[in-house]
Image 1: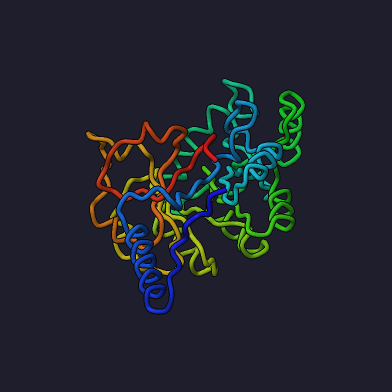
Image 2: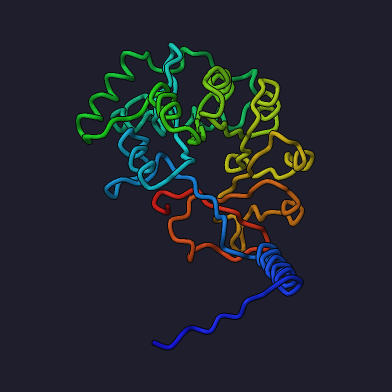
Length: 285
């Protein structure tokens, strides 16, 4: 068998080759548009068996098996202060019921009024009623809506996994609850500058500022170098030509990551001058 011919580098030649390799690697890492390092957040726990928005224990377990370390979950409160993984109340209330009809107005109220005008806990359903309806929905689907304690336990048994909170209701109350949970388990999303300041004052070290409720980029102007601001999130359609909320060029100065939602096929993402570092996704992993 013919021997293989190997070139052996010695002394200065070896050092020169190593230096060239290091320069090549450095050049690769700074090339614009490189694909490496894309951040993926599994949306609402992630898709499972073709179902989305389940916020279920089963979806979270499936996402963990796929290697997910960041998952977004939707949380809603009872009047007693329990938090359950649901997108909104109509998910388990009868269509056309008073609660279902009220819910859309309630979400808009929380999105567009100052903190002092928020309604009290009386506006939420009692825990017994809410949990009974959740149990009924669990029996119907064969999946189980997670609870705050489920998320805490998952974080305990899976170090390095974090849950990104999302709520359509009183985010101040949720922030007050999440700060008392084990460090690193939750990364809160905030929706306006007042919530950001409240979360910062509570002591959160990582915060996500999501713009989908307002689209007011000016709120971020003074925060781009603020250490707790970890990621900025906006709807993917805002990148498209003709959008009513096109992102400003100065947003690219942010040293953290800019993510868009919800993207299940990157090929559908509109081209934009905005740097995109990752996606919220139901199905990508």
